[in-house]
Length: 208
Image (cartoon, rainbow, N blue to C red; front, side, top):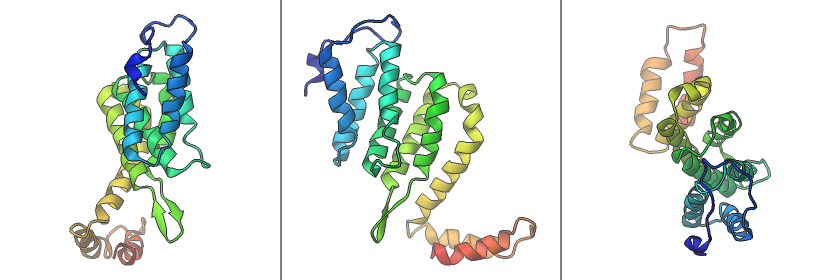
């Protein structure tokens, strides 16, 4: 597929209605399907392709593309679809193509993706989805005014902290230090009302 051969049309600032060439719709449909691909390189290329094409479309049609991407965040979709969806939204956010009104519908999915963890037999999947969600969070923080993200800061901060701690704990060089901190500072803790000691005692065996 050679994207440059497709005759791109009006830029995102042009909000006039027009008939989108059939070639563009076909290309976009193919790229949207590629977001579900099991090959991560295909997903990355698809996400970048969506970003480039969407930047040349009208706001109305670009919003339809975003709507299609958000359909990937379904309980019935695979972890690959969630991963591809996060990558595509991150590319759009990085280019400033996610309109502020869309943040209210996008950010709840991003929070779910940050905590994504699905059991598959005797193992779980989701680390790539969580990574892509963090990339999306970075893209939003980099591209948008803080005032636009302020209503979601507390909610997203909780998800980021959980994701970060769990990510770090999987590495042997960090895990002993986290366990030692729980033993030294949290198992015997002054704040009895928050049950810090009890929570820490439960976490130590799981961390090991």
